[in-house]
Image (tube, rainbow, N blue to C red; front, top):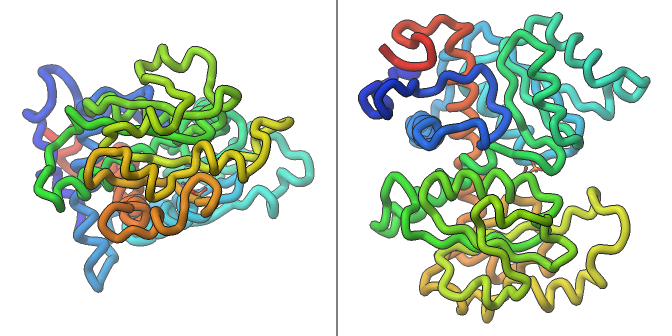
Length: 343
Ligand code: CP
């Protein structure tokens, strides 16, 4: 099955707007609302495809995708690899720990080396904010951000939006966007690229976003992004439709940000009792990896009717297939796809 373009006819977009004019996907901040909706619509076609017995097509046959990961990952790396393979591409993974980065090679020299191998798309995860933009400026092919430092994790926000949309649809509450929905994001907001991308994505789709963290883990000036901030978790959850929990990113912390994991759980852990403060049937989300018993209790994480954590993982493959497909169209000269849209 190859993309047909039928989910996104040109007339669906604002006058004069192109469906997706970008070469790279470096962040949600670069995207207009209609571009987010375009990527979600493209991802929809891969959801059912991924549930089939035969999950292979030749849309990206002959293309080479390099996943260059300078930080650890389970979900993002594997889903980008699965996405590329299901689209028929040749997929190569570069783990920094086993690469010449360990011999002192710079980020720019690494990027130039990958570029010389004539990759058709490069997927980057890096611990430094802005590293993906830097690499994008040095290579000739599309670059996809798989998470850079505390900056952005755009495909995570897109898969979260798709998972949320599907969960609401399953309840008969589905619509294209999230107008009227209140989402509480709680945890280590300071170090979270997931929070930043989700604030941008959820708000672009009409949701109200509340942020909750201990004062030491709330970024200064984050209110300027349009979200309401809370230090009191109970108040932040009051009537919320979605509780999105984030882990403490201890690998990015220099010094003591919380007294102890036990005290953090007492004040900011999502328990059954706390979930009752949300709207009836409120949904529970977590990008993973989870620290059970710290930011979320197991009996909440595993609630079959409320937790959509595994659905988030499932949607990750569909979203990454859509992003790889769309961003490589220019290089593949896909018939009908001209200048960032179907014609
Ligand atoms: N959500 C997420 O980025 O998980 P990984 O670190 O396992 O990729």
